[in-house]
Each structure stands twice: as structure tokens, then as C-alpha cells.
Length: 418
Image (cartoon, rainbow, N blue to C red; front, side, top):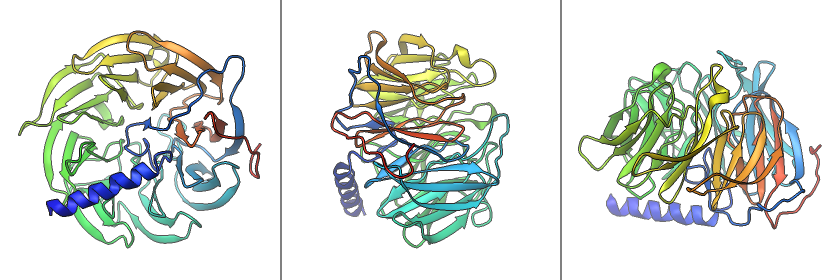
């Protein structure tokens, strides 16, 4: 079994290296909001990035996946969710998949939540109501489908299913929140069950593989941080990190022997030692409270946005955290409840009012390099996607904008573009 898993991980790592410039699911290749791609332009002066194209896709917060020259996201309009597949360079709509779905606003304007995931020619799509589809990534043909409530006894979280499916070892893995298998693995091609495990309520982050080849899945669910064995789903370890309303939404950062987690609602962050039989916090702090936006890491430092909705968005702050010490190095207001990704050694910040900022990932001070207004409106909580020199930004109202931001990419206006 160990040998077989080693082969699987070697094959998986090789595949990721081949597609290092693609962004196949929420958070990118490793679910850590980090792009290894080189060539992001940061010296703009009085110029602005060229707009390759833009498209209206409907209300929501699904981020963009880009794989093999195609880009995907979903949005809500007129009682339905629509998944769009477009040519990543041209913006031409290649196909769509539409299905009935509620708007489900609940204190915000509502719309789609989950980001599609693409692996081995198949796109996996989750709705906030519990519909789950496996589609041919080339043409949108339905290969198989499930319903998280009817087929697995799932429990829908208050704000809907939001996690992006995890594709690994010929399986697709997702949360159902069921008391009889809160985490489910299906055969990626057939949809037949492989295993079900756990009994925790689902939250809003996406399941992810541990970074250092331990054959473990990390889930940040309604209970807190839980690890599962990849081969059979067996629960290995758990660390309680409960918040009001069960909102654990930001992705964990795996550091090897420890994992950094963060939530809002007065809970804050913790650096969790997962090497112990019973995990414990190396430190905890309410000073770093990330409600939705995931932290990104460069070496010994993490960068993120602390704050929460409910009329206090203007108090939110971008900050730099010295991970081992749990010490804040600097903070900067002005981004609202925006989001952050890391491209090589640059922070790319999208504010909740639609400003795109490029800054050095510098732990001594905040150092802005460029700033552009790319989206309108507010509550723009969806993180940007960077792939093959293209920056995808998506507003909560449904405007999808693709910008030329790589030094080598070229502007080509195509069908479907503005």
C-alpha cells in the first residue's frame, strides 16, 4: 500500500509540475492561493494592464479555474446557475451548463459559491444547494451526477455548500456534512463510492492534500481542523476550532509538522502541532481573524486580511504575520474584506471594492508597486486567479474580467470580449 501511494504521489507531483502555469481549482494547484509562475509584471508606471476580455456570468463568488487554454466559473441568474467554459485568451464562450438553483442570499446578495475543479479532462461542479456534476471539460457533456442531500444524507451549511472538490489518486473528494460520512470519496470517472468518513458538519473551505506527502487530507470543517487518511478516509487527528455560525472558510496552510488556521467571529488564528497524538496549539491569537480570505505564505511569513462583515468592513486590515512567533509585523488598512494571492514573490490583492493592487511580499513593511480599478460594486470577496500571464477577476455582481499581466502574454480580442 505504501509503495502504491508513493507511486500515486510521484505521478501527481509530476502532473502538477507539467501544468505549473494552470490553476485547476480553488486556490490553485496546491490549494494555497500561490502561483509558481514567473513573469508577473509589477512595474506599470502610468500604464494599466490590457483587458483581454470581459463577460457577464451572473451573481456569485465562484472563483475561476484555468486549464489547458480554457477558463471556467459559474454564476446565478433567473433561478439558475450557469457554468461557463470560455477560451482563456479570447473570452469566447465555448459551452455552458445550466441547472436550477436558488439565489439563497441570507444577509448578502447570494449566487454561486463553489469553484469548479478540473482534472484529467473532467470538470467537477458543486452547487450551494447540493447538486454535484461531473462534466466533460471539453464539451460540457454530463458524465454523472449526484445530490449531496439525497444520495449521501448531507447537511447543507447555512450559507450553502461552498467547497471546491478535491481531485487526487483517481478520486474526487468533497464534504457533505452527513453524520454518516461527512467527507466522501468517489471514483473520479464513474462516480461510484470509494469511501465515506467522519461525522462533522460541513463548513466553507475546500478539502486539500497535505503538502509534504503524508497521504493525508486536511478538512477545515464546522468542528475545526481534521485530517483523514487518503486511501480509506479514516479520521486520523482532529483539533477543535469552532466559531459562531460554523464559519471556517479560509484555507489552512500546511507547514509540515504544523498547520496554520484562521477564522473570524472572535476566534482568530492558531498554529496547530499535528505531530502529536492529540494535536495542540503552539500559539493562539484573536489578533489575526480571517473571515473568508485565505492567508498566503512566503518562507516564514504569512499575509492575509483580517476582519468580518456586518458594518465593520472598513476596519479590515491587510497584515503580515511571523508564523512561528505568532507576531504581527505590519498592517495596512484600505482593502476592506478583499482577498490575496501570491505570485512568485508578489502579493496580488483584490479589494472588496474592486481595486487590484500588486505589492512586494515584504515582511518589513507594506510596499505597493501598482494599483488599478478593475471591478465595480462591493462585496467582491472572490480571490483572483493567475494563470499563463492572465489575471482573472470576478465581481460579486457577475462581471468577469481577464487582464494581461504577464510579461510574455499578448492581447487578443476575441468573440465574447467587450
